[in-house]
Image (cartoon, rainbow, N blue to C red; front, top):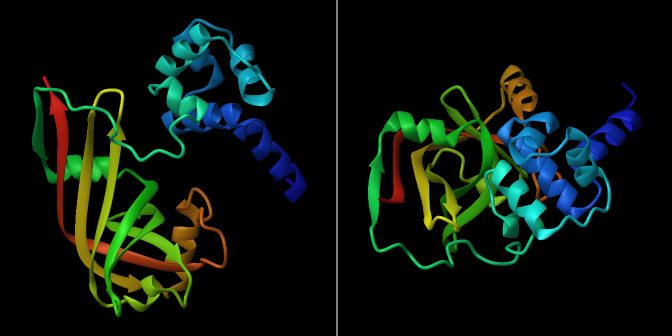
Length: 225
């Protein structure tokens, strides 16, 4: 497929408005087709396509049903929480902190997302958000070859990923600790390029792969009865 055609197809899939892009992104994240989303919220697939591709202005009831179908909130779909830090809600009285087993931690790490890498820098501790992928036992991310993260090669780092559900006042976090190294093997780089879901959100020449092989993984979940 020509490059321009691929871009056009990707733009259509992502939606043409902020609402459309959020709907398409969440649907893709859940692995749902438009037909499946429509079935969940009592609408036709064509209506889901309309919301994703056109400058739609659905009513409050439609947004509530759509948010439920996409397992999210109206605020998240409409972008009302974009500039707010997560976790602003008041905790439930019966909240508790539950330790997670390693198998559950690895499941939550999944295959890609946004995580944070904690390293020591000449100015002190630093924490850097990165797009990451999981390939086998490795957690890998891309950075600039001159960045502080690249200079941390050969040192022990902490990698953290989490999820906050403001509506239910609950969430989880997973912490992986291990040595970070630069990926220089050509085949390994090709393998990571193949599984990467997107370019780094921060943009720029971030093509230098780094990987962490965890020696310790722990996690916790905030839950309530």
